Length: 172
Image (cartoon, helix red, strand yellow):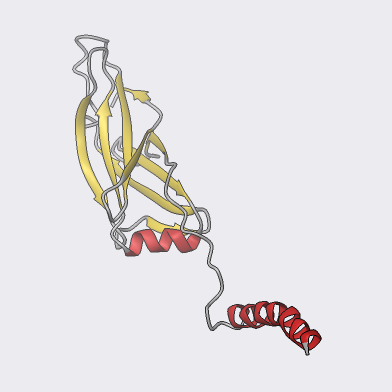
């Protein structure tokens, strides 16, 4: 009789483990999902180029912002209130002055999307010469303007990360 009890107890643990594994893989408990990927990196780039003729000398402004993560998390962030804010600055020797912004992009904004590489904002428009891009009056450093954008990704809970783009130099 003692032998039977040992056999039953010896089989009980492996059967329980097998049964639990079957429940888990069978969907009763559900498969283990990959943990959500926190947004920890952001990149931003800015370009300002002359529009092709026959335009009246307009400037093409293009901003590209990337927040790397998987598609599932990118959609989750955007569906739960995440946003990207852009602020444009003039780079100056003493302090950088805010010249435009914030411009806020949310889920419904044109150019903001969730991709396989993460959250991506591509926005572009045209500006006239002498607009906000003309950030220097020419008294301190000639007539050269130096402009950059600071991109800020803010999740639905208000946690933010930011990046500064390259500086674009020209006579705007």
